[in-house]
Image (cartoon, rainbow, N blue to C red; front, side, top):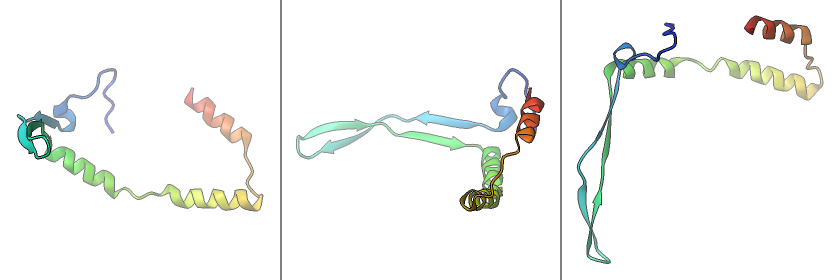
Length: 94
């Protein structure tokens, strides 16, 4: 993971997304015989961004097992909260 400091990364650092707005396309509305202009937007994602998105989609959802374990503990009445562990983690974050 790369930390960029106070400024966000430039498109060259992460890949880029290009959005283009094309000129309108005329469609006829039959009921009123009126021409309507419909704008079409186009989004183009760079190859690097496509690679990153594919990698993100491959990450397994590992928290499901933990969530099920906690749900079962709560339902059975065996779930206990260790306040000292919570306090410890809060202090680490400060």
